[in-house]
Length: 167
Image (cartoon, rainbow, N blue to C red; front, side, top):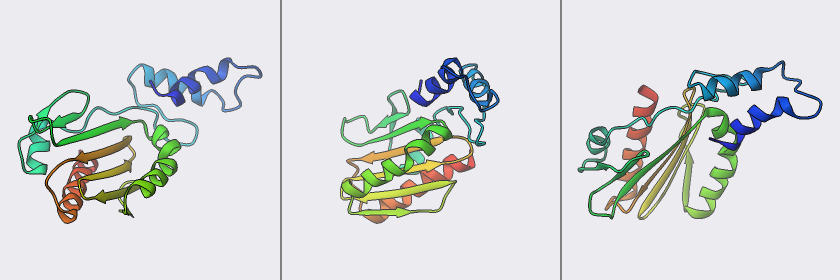
């Protein structure tokens, strides 16, 4: 459970109560119940399911991948992997700027890709990272140790993001 969700659940219990009209509490309770919830700013607090199956990842990446659980897909050899971290749009909004700043320090190339509400793509020789915030939730994708050049990482990551947005 994200710290923001915990904070949303605990905020009304603090001294002085809440001045959000109960939106945070209602959003937190709905998220715990697995329902669609929207915080006062209109940002979803619902954490979506993993948007991929091993078959879909294999198709998009162009090589056989296995589902290793928790939205982690591996090549079965312990080398290449795709990790997808899924969170609510609210959590994604709260961490996006920091995450993008850190990518800028770790990757020589970071580009805003203009998909969803916010998104970026960072690529270096053996790794690519993308973050996407959409109406459904927030997603961080990391591809590591594929024998791809930058152009192929770029295309594959964009295909993965387009699949998330289309699902």
